[in-house]
Amino acid sequence: MLVSLLRNVIRVGRLTVRMPSGETLEVGNAGEDTTPHVQVRLRGRLTPLKLAVNPDLYLGEAYMNGELELERGTLWDLMDLVGRNLNNRLSWEAGWLGPLLRGVRGALARVITPLAARRNVAHHYDLSEDLYREFLDEDLQYSCAYFSHPGLTLDDAQAAKKRHIIAKLNLRPGDRVLDIGCGWGGLALSIAKAEDVTVTGITLSTEQLKVCQTRARDAGLEHRLRFELCDYRELTGQYERIVSVGMFEHVGAASYDAFFRTLAGRLTDDGVALLHSIGQRGRPPGASNAWITKYIFPGGYTPAVSEVTGAAERVGLWLTDVEILRLHYAQTLRRWRQRFLTRSSQICALYDQRFVRMWEFYLAACEMSFRYGDLMVVQAQFAKHVDTLPLTRDYMLDYERELESRADARPRLVSVH
Image 1 (cartoon, rainbow, N blue to C red):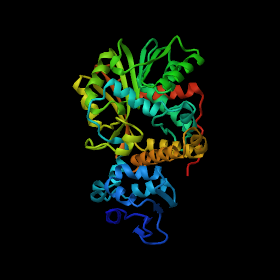
Image 2: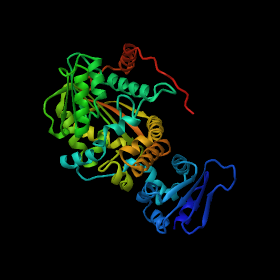
Image 3: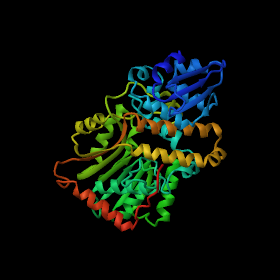
Image 4: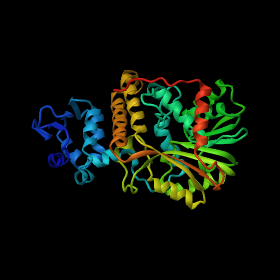
């Protein structure tokens, strides 16, 4: 089964597979100079069968467990080879390449209760803070960076992302700002520093909450910045500005209307909301990626853009601006993976080698989903009234440039090979 599938799919590049039986399989272009050329060795008598029957789960597990070893090239090379063959639609959609590269976009239509949401968040975000400090930027931004200039460092691209988002909020002195899914507090801190506003950040991660509260104290901003352990459905009060970055992927499709009803209910009449989320091109998928769901993001669901806009429209919100960030997340994931691998010995000391291989697979697979698949990042701006914001987008660019000049942070450009 696996042999037939691979022969039908791998047509660009070259893949050599050494089977547990000792047989060697060559698929793809046969020329010696073909690039890329990857060679893997499968261990375990049942590994080829498992890969053929349920590759959605077992490809990642085989790499984690040492049942798939790279003998030529790296895991990134293997995933790149997979990505280059995405055009063979009829083959990969029915087989193991499509589900793998669909990655984090899997569908989960059931309602995610507050209890389930807390459990799902804890699975991923309550891991050691030390882990994330090993491969994220200094500000602990765990969402897509914004490469406003070619060759930006990871830290500068994440700072540019925050400026890009803050500019779209069109802040005014005295605004009350809500950050839904505030992570480790970096964006909330930047908002509080940008204008004389008060910011409330909410998270479901106890580990993130501790970091947020410590950072607010250290910055001397406790009087204008507070963080709470809170589900978005438990919110009360009104806010002139609401922002949510990298949280919507955990809401679940069946809860989209409830999310936007909450957004509309918490937003003042002259308020503005900015949603930053992974999205996908095309129709909603029909099944979740088993490996990503089991090991990385239980309960994750990546929407089609139409699902986001449709849910917002059903509660009466105006879509006032939308921007699609293409390939920015591929660049972000590439830098995360490179930093992760250079610090793999420290991360192995925190967990173990299997964990290191699991996260390497996660970062590489997700990068290819954005590089060759149909994933993107969506920044959607909403308001209750059609005349809430200026008529043109000039205010965004002007404020973004002002923030950059205030920081006196000339982008540090690096060569990227």
